[in-house]
Length: 231
Image (tube, rainbow, N blue to C red; front, side):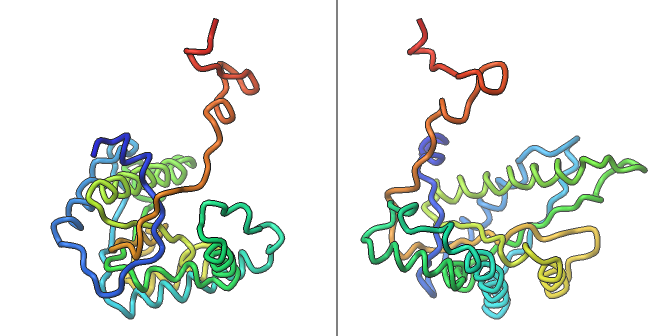
């Protein structure tokens, strides 16, 4: 599988076969590609915790459900089922939406074989005065590292999905996770990257805007026209 096929076929997997293991060499291969993501001045301000303990995964699932049920449950009118047309059959679409409202859709860390807790730092730098933008830069860097892992997982036939709900929405949740996993001050968990054997393959994915809908030429608002359509 080349990189373009991995990009186009990558899917968010949220249902894993309980008890089915991913070979250790695949986990290590996925972790290794994260090291090769770019970072500002090669500072590599990222750390990863490999989690297989079931109680730890259940804690992340509990926090994810608590956060997501609050986020989606109070805005039901903004989450209509017709936005999820690609989830078939229709009954499954309704279940998916209801899973958003009660948070159960985001409990998948507990069924994943392996959860990689991805952490970054906005203090990890070699300058006496840290630039104010370093936090944004380091989040961008670890995001690229996560994407590396996701594409590698796709290429290896491993189901993957990231779940940031355990650590967003309330700083106390982030602190709970940090305390539980002994994450030192100055480092923050960003997301739980879940790996496992998918219950079923996802063939279709959500629609994407066409390139012309998101790309401008030279300045905002100037339409970008594909080369084959230019006169």
